[in-house]
Length: 279
Ligand code: GLU
Image: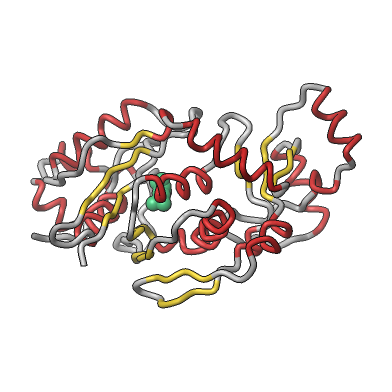
């Protein structure tokens, strides 16, 4: 069946073989007569750079990929995420968190929690327990804050949820493992989880493909879909491309960027083959 799929890179560096594998996986999964969309996930102004966005377009075109226009660039659609955020706030499932990274690290060290969950160690819930007076005082003092999902309340409201993965079958969502995730960051009025969920719905994506490192994040997206009355697409989390030592290819490893492979004289067909998609 033809599907609408998307490749959604964050322009925080040059594309490497691992991300190109994801791009081809998504394009192929659209099937004959399907639609393949490109989305630039550039909501983090501290890490994203316009020159990386340009490089993404250029490298993908050089590799022979074609995608539908227009490209959705997330930083140009903050109002869409803001609207979704306002709905969550109206439901009372979001609260402000004034903790700095070091506050959180100290609290976690005190509690002796072990790392797990989609976003690392779950937030210990410090600001969820603030009284209305404490919250008002922190806001008045001009302290910056992020907004977090009150996971307990959100899960209670949404009830039991499932989603389907082409490689894994039906999965019972357990978003509570991630704890109170950030839904809007200090420096930007949204988050990865919120904007990806809103966009997949707005763009009519029928099949979300991405690396298996994001399987647990899908539980959170399924929860947001339930809260925001958005449709649930089908999912297909693919295995990650590994290097010769069996380690996951990392963005920091410059040797596998398409830029470097191109300047080392590799052809587009050779790079496609290295990314796991020989013609
Ligand atoms: N922007 C995310 C990344 O580059 C991918 C998100 C997704 O495919 O859902 O890791």
